[in-house]
Structure formats: C-alpha cells, structure tokens
Length: 355
Image 1 (cartoon, one colour):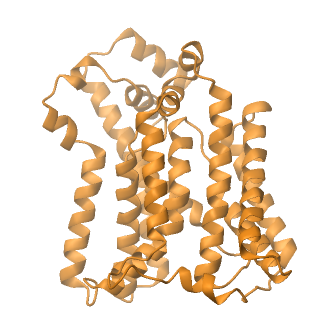
Image 2 (image 1 turned 135 degrees about the vertical axis):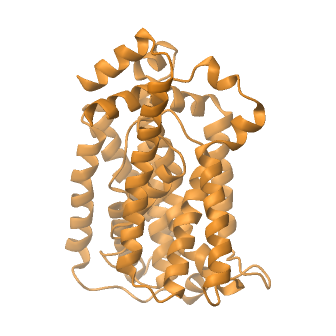
C-alpha cells in the first residue's frame, strides 16, 4: 500500500504535455469537479422523486442555512490544503468564538463591537497556528491537533456546560430573513460574496498562483520568488478569522452560545474540500469543485433527515465520503502511473515520498 501511496503522490503532482493534448471539452468535463457536480445533480434528482417534500422552497431554505458555516470555513481550508497543509482546529475556533461572542453580548457589548472582538479572537487563533507552523517549523497536522483540543478546552473552561441563549432579536431574525418570496436566506449573499472573493484570489491573482506553486513544490516556489512562509501564515490567519465568522453566524442562527457548537464540523469541511477534487497532496483543485462538494454533502444530509434517517447514518455516509475522496484520487493516480511511461523524475519523487 505504501508503494501505491508513494506512486499516487508522485503522479498526482505530475501534469505532462499529454494532459493538455486532449480536446478542450475533455479537459473541461472529464474532471473530478465535473464528476462531483454530476453526482450532485443525480442526488438532487433522486431525492426530489423519492423523498417527500424535498423539492420545495423550505428545503432549499434550510439547506442554505445549514451549509453556510461549512462553506465559510471550506474557502480558506481549500487554500490551506492546496499548499499541502491542513487545519484541524477550525471547529474549535468556531466554538471558542461562539462562547466569547455570547459572553460579550451577555456583558452588554454592542453587537457590532462583539462581532469585531470575536473576529480578532479568531485572528489570534489563526496567528498561533501560523506561528507554530511557519516560524517554529512544526507540522501543520500536529499543531492543529493540539490547538483543536486547546481551543475547545478554553471554550469549555469559559462557559462550562451552560449556554448563553439571549441575543438581540433583530440580529437573530437577520439569519432567518429571506430574499423576497424565495427560499434563499439574505445572508447567503454574504457567503456568495466570499466565494467570489476567494475564487478571484485563488484563480486570478499572483498570490493564488503562489499557493498552487507551494503545493507542487515548496522549494521551487521559493526559488521562483514566492514568499512561502508568509503565504502559509496568511492562510492560517484567514482560516481563524473565517472560522470565527462562522461561529458568530451559528450562534445567531441557533440563538445559542456553547462550547459544543460545531463539534466534528472540521471533518465535514475537509470531506467537502477533498470530495470537491482538491488534492490531499496539494497543488491541485478548483473552487467550483469545493462548492459542489459542500452542496453534495449538505443535500445528502438534508434528504436523509427528511427521510427520517438518523444522524448516525448521516455521519457514517460523510465519513465514507471522506475516505473515498482521499483514496479515489490516490488510486487513480497510481493507475495513471502504471499506464504512462515512467520518467526518471517520477522515480525520484516516488523514492523521496517513500523515504
């Protein structure tokens, strides 16, 4: 299995002129992102026929409300995974932000000031992760496992098992307000704006191209003029800040601030990102695939809920999708490596990955 993993890692990063020699429609349609979009269409079509009340405005309304925090966190997570790193602490940052936001409101802070203060806390959490990864040089996986426990522990220490449930009604109502007679929440426009901003950053700026370059080879990116450690640090700042934003949204949406908010959400976010075609090895992915991945998981959960299937089954399906989203590209990369004539560079990469 080690040989398959090492070979898959090597070939997942290697795009050759043969890849660009195919017709445009094949390059556009025969991709992981297109497969996820097709799967989403099929799931929606099946659920509309087989599940009562699925094809309705109210289902769309709750679906968009439920996936909003996942989408918000998935955007910076996509960029982090593209560089070859990962951040497992985002759900704990969300919980800590939720608790501190509730405590600020309870202490009489104006909501606008409490929002700014909570975003600063998320920024500090991201800075701690970024400092330990880029300055101290520790692995992102080890660092964020530790901060995942630490941030959640601080949240539990601050609020214990109690919850804050009193928030200004005009703000809690804002999270449930729709656009006219549609099933689209008003705050979905904020999420849409974030998606556009991240799509532009990721695909149309030198900063975004630097992110892809770091994922392909940190050394090559460094020699090409990309400020690798600064870029990685900025991405952890973004992840912390947007996790705090998701915490504020979730708190106002449920009118509840507690330390258990967002428990396990990091796995759903990572599953959606990887399912959307972002390579776990870094350097490959597209924002529309991630959006489709988030909608696919949200749609499956929504359909299962309407079909009165327990949340345990839903977690099993999400976990299975996470495993498949990691294994499938690796296995396909291994198959491509067996079909193609193997270059000396590929052997070197496989050897380095194995060693």
